[in-house]
Image (cartoon, rainbow, N blue to C red):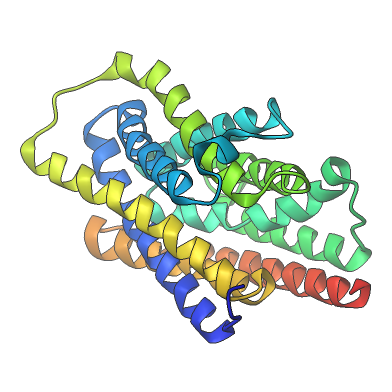
Length: 292
């Protein structure tokens, strides 16, 4: 049994968010030069190799990782996440890291809103109020009716919805399947799906960009490893609020590397969304403590 260490878990989550922010910056650069499907496909090849290696070393080996109680939902999860990554990376190209992540930060609110119809969980009025406030924050970011509304601004919101559904399905299959099983199916299914569509969009890549691609693949594996370790040594409710730091790190990369600008409405809206998200996480923790 792993010894619980909340402080270590928090630092691991902070490291995870930084690595994923670097991954997003690399994805933005590569997707602006090459086809998004090809970039995500190569990334998934490495990810699939990583999850297969992890599964092979675990107790029961690959046979235990493959065995699932949800032979339909597990591949569906993998397909959903792969599609969400493609949509989000496209958002990076269209809108930049700052605005994309500001809108995407609404996904915990979508998880809370959809947990009732998808998982049958009760959502109290306080969390519904926080969800409403959070989406006011999204409107502040998007500013519909105040300036010319760009349909591209909906891209990260669609990605957030898809990621929320992925998270809810993960919780659902987790009632019977071990986390190692879901992790394996996520990587392998995503690699298969992306290969089927991405191989038709292959483009020659420069030597320097192959270097960036190698770093991108390594950050994906490292980020998932750090995330797994964070949840191993600390409770999810203790470390999850620090996941919002990915927005901060991504914004820093967007501004310093890509010359993006942090608009006042994006900053204010992001703060509203994050505050609402943290409140829903706190209410979830309070509810879990009462039930425990």
